[in-house]
Image 1 (cartoon, rainbow, N blue to C red):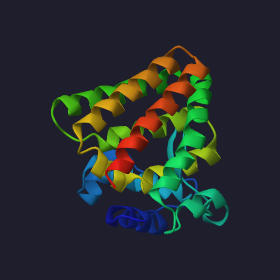
Image 2 (image 1 turned 30 degrees about the vertical axis):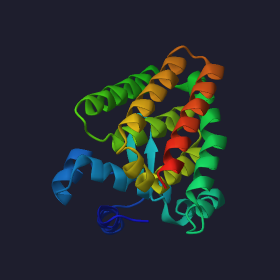
Image 3 (image 1 turned 120 degrees about the vertical axis):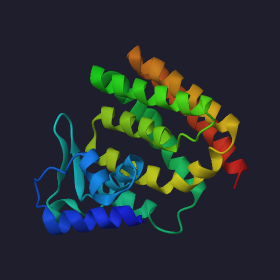
Image 4 (image 1 turned 180 degrees about the horizontal axis):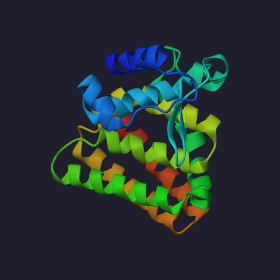
Length: 219
């Protein structure tokens, strides 16, 4: 499951940092590993998914205690098994993410809402430029899970995002997928800004149904 960048970052953490230490800023990691910011972010999320790193709101990313925090939850571990199909992953998303959107509508901070707005602005810019917005697509869903404020579910969502990376790369090649993705995200964000839990849940469910139709058609 690890990318080469994630393996290098993991080795750096294990050899040079200890539990409780802060992970260096992204710009420093970009310079150290000579890779793009998006590669660093993907690597960080992979290591968060297995419990080696943990985001702390208002603080940064912290190295976890290897004894107590590196065991992936049973749900996440099951998702990582090779026998898990794309359809099953999409089904898990449908179970989890609408409820997370409803929860986020009630719990998201103004700063988190502002960050989601910035993500969608970047996504729209890329759409207009004819570029893929894989990072923005993943980041938006990740930030909703973060705003929902449940550490266990957040870990599962990170595993889901990792498993769906390849299907995103394929499906986002289709212009209609990118347009529908952005429109769906905008509907969800509008509900979050209104603090309307029911509308946020419905908007996420509609978005996931649209995504599922396009993704499964392209398999």
